Length: 174
Image (cartoon, rainbow, N blue to C red; front, side):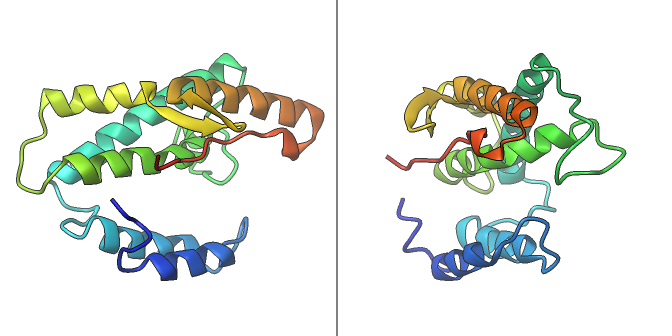
């Protein structure tokens, strides 16, 4: 699947250069709208359908894995960096699982069609994504291992006060 040739790809690249940490311009929201209109045009995130069921289930799997890893390094997931909802016990996990959303999005775009049922086979495949390869720190690792590397590096970065020590996974469309 060629994402760079999709409608909206150039606009997404342009927005990506404008996104700033803590930016008030809401560029991330604008990008999300273009992204879903271009890459998942058959659905909106508010609908009750198979595509959203797959996205929600996959995001929950990634969120749970991230939360387990962060708590194993002593972090309290209720205290986030960008996610700060006082009713959310997983703010920090949500901050870090953002880097893994594209994995779930890509799997869903390739495997789920509107109108089909969301099956146990789909759920099993989404859980199995944790064993899929992803690049982190210039090496290919399973996603579950990359999550641990990310959490360990966050621990190192916070204890040393050096944000450059944070390692995040990168989606590689090989």
